[in-house]
Length: 59
Image (cartoon, rainbow, N blue to C red; front, side):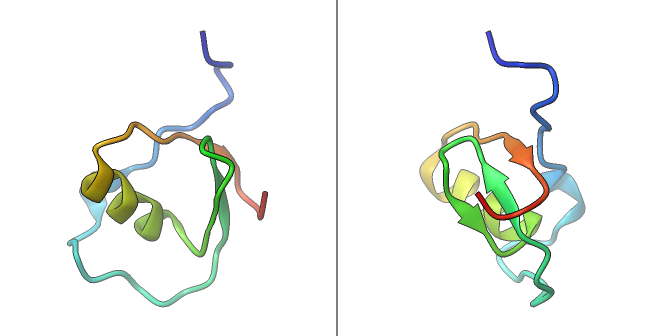
């Protein structure tokens, strides 16, 4: 079971594939640092993996 503090990214609010260029890094549960939540959502859409946000900073 995953710890409840893992956050599910709110991918519905982004109009993919275009992401804002703001740098607001998040650490994914795949231990990858993404520049922002939207970039993480793009990765989820491309790979089909359910990646959570571990914390709102670089891994």
